[in-house]
Image (cartoon, rainbow, N blue to C red):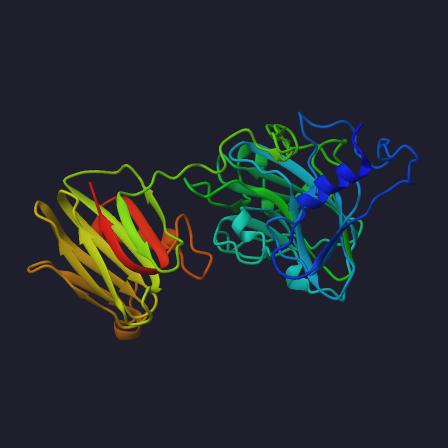
Length: 413
């Protein structure tokens, strides 16, 4: 049999923190003379599939959390806050889990007390999601009402059971308190709930909770009976999970819906280039390039070179001031350029190419700002920019490319 040391090492390996702080794995039971492990008394039933889901802090931020030996109960016992999330995630499908609120202090940091689902990149604090997560605060409001500003939920606290139904096919998350669905939701029918992104490249979704001083919560991923039956068509979140060669719990599906890369080569000072090709094509194509700031610093030059044959409409987006220079290769044609900027920016275009400028600090207009696909959690809104660009040009987006600090972009065939 595996030793207790081996099992605890496996648990600790899934609980690495980003930032300063400590995660403590509490070992139940007394020492064994033969150093073998008897079944832990609080393990909730047999594994679901080949893997039993538990809590982790691999992708999240916490200053001091404790995860109990059963892997399902998280506590925050110091004067700060932290985030715990499931050790496995799903891409697509319809899933349900419950969280029992064992303790919740009135002295905690209220804005940190959220629960729901999100992709790995938004789990560090559950507060800003950019549409790639849905988290319910203890007040009954959404931690980030990004996509559903009129949501009206119910506050929850000690003794309450909060159910979460995540429809990762339709991109919608539903919350219930003690059996009653919030905001007039009907998950089985797909009515109500909170919108999330399930676009290509959006990644897989994890269950998660933010805890503050004195908070204790216990998850049920379906290894034991739920307090309230899941809605029709929803499976326990802990089902469909397998163990890979390293012993980690995984969704056997792809790690996030893959995003077909754009036909773009980029030099980015920040090394965070993302892109997406939608497949839309026609006599004229719409290609969007977004940065937050030039790689060489605010006010610097950004080169955009078009080698792609045919007609291209360009949308160039930046938050900081930038000097875009657009050039073309033989056989490539830029039909028009739309500049969207917060700070005063300029475009040097090929002769005869019209440039429409939407510069907020100059004319109070902007199409939007974004530097990341599928969305920008740094304050931008990729989908808002895409929608505005499509509306202004009358064209479907063919590709989006971006990074925080961009220097050179080359659109290829």
